[in-house]
Picture 1 (cartoon, rainbow, N blue to C red):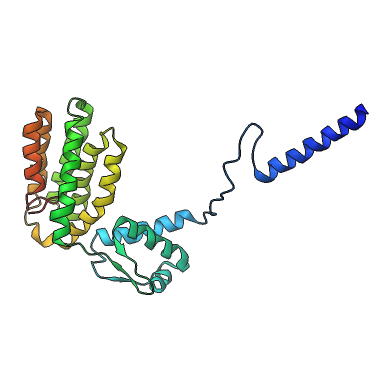
Picture 2: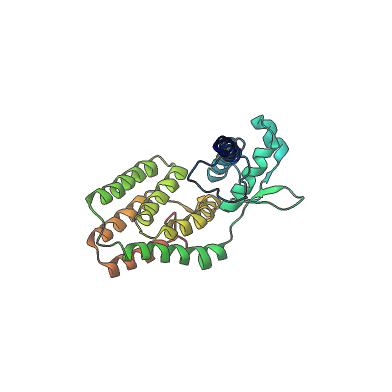
Length: 250
C-alpha cells in the first residue's frame, strides 16, 4: 500500500511540475493572471524609426503639414511598413504627427492660441511649483550643472546653432523639473515639450539674437541662487512671456 501511495505522490509531483513548466511559474510563485502580453518583435527598430522621424521634425527637415508616407519611408529605410506604422503611433502620442484613418499621416502643426492660452500657463505653473517646493534643497553640484548648460548655450548661440540651442534650453528647464519629488511633474512636462518644440521650429525666423538666450538664463541662475521665491517668480514669469526667449512667447 505504501508503495502505491509513493507512486501516486510521484505521479502527482511530476504532473504538478509539468504544469509549472508549461506556465513558466517557479515553485513558491503565483501566476500573474491569465492575461498574456503581446510578443515584442523588433522593439529597437520601431524606436529607431520613431527617433529618426522625430529628429527630422525637430531639426526642421520635416515641417508642419508635410505628409509622411509609409511606403516611401519603408523604401528609403529598406524595412517593412510595420515598424513605421508603430512609430507613427508613438510620434502621435508625443504630439509630433497627426494620424487619420484612411488618410496619410502628417507632421503636426501648433497654433498661437494653444501656446499662449494652454501650454505657457501649464509650463509656468510646473516650473514655479518645482522651484517653490525645492528652493532649500539645491546644492553647489546642482548649480554647477545649470552653469555648465548655460556655458554650452553661449557657445551654441555664437555658432548660430539654433536646434542644439533649443535642446540645451530645454535641458536647463528639465534639470529644474527633475529635482521635484513629484514624479508627475516630469510626466506633465513630457506631454507638452514636443508641442513647444514644434513652435520653435515653426517660428525660427523670429529669433534675431540667439545670444540673448544664454544671457536670459544667466539672470535665471542668479535669481535661483538668491533663493527668494518672490524674486524668482517675477524673473521666471518675465522669462516665460518674453518673446525674445526661445522657450517663451508673447
